[in-house]
Image (cartoon, rainbow, N blue to C red; front, top):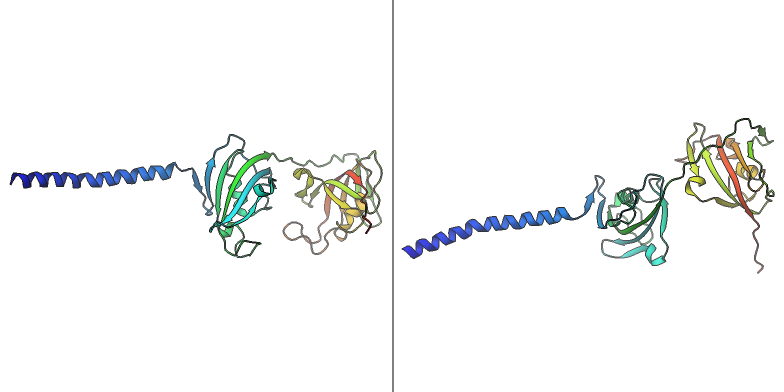
Amino acid sequence: MRKVTLFLSLSMALLAFLPSYSQDKKDKRKKKNKSKDIIITESGLKCEFLQRGTGIAPKVGDKIVAHYTGTLLDGTKFDSSVDRGKPFEFPLGKGRVIKGWDEGFALLHVGDKAILTIPPELAYGERVTGKIPANSTLIFEVELLNVVERVVAKPFDIEGKETKLTESGLKYIMVKEGDGVFPTIGQQVFVHYTGYLEDGKIFDSSVERGQPLPFPLGKGRVIKGWDEGVALLKKGGKARLIIPPDLAYGERGYPGLIPANAILTFDVELIDIKTTTTKQP
């Protein structure tokens, strides 16, 4: 009888211990999961940090310089800046990339490496894009290499400057006379510009992107007001162009950016002029 009692006592002790041991394992598992460096946003984006950097965090409008490799859920690689050997650059928060990128890179600091898991609604949705099927969840392994802080474009100082009017209706204010030559039709011109709507809001700026716009003068590659206005400048010159709708985007406007029949103001600077050479067959 004593042996039975002892056996029962030991059995009860073991049973009492097992739930406690099991709970300990669960608690350890929870702590391990919590210790993973993972952020899940309200939109459904998942960001898992692989490496923490010590650099600055980007702000809206800053230029992001990053490496990435994109794969589907089944592991199929569809794109990689690493394979190309050239980092990808884009302005943060300006809608130039998928929503998941704008949101994901805002969570990073320079030097961070992370895996972004992006649901379809923050990627390409129902669209088929290249190797990416419709409604695909995308996995990006990313590294934030650098952040170039946004340059804020400032309006030209036109106080005391004369406003002139051309026959077409273009108004211009010469802010600085260039010391170079005038461009001719067909030459490649490089222009820095900032475009303003009638309420003073900036709708586009090469200055903030840090990259002048090249185009062949007088070939209809830009709005008429630009072809006419830039031709008035010497290399190094600066002017404000006030362009009526019929020399800009007219009744159609530019959806999401420029209203119909908008009068546009551009502060422009002619940075460089190059003559393009045509190869003979």
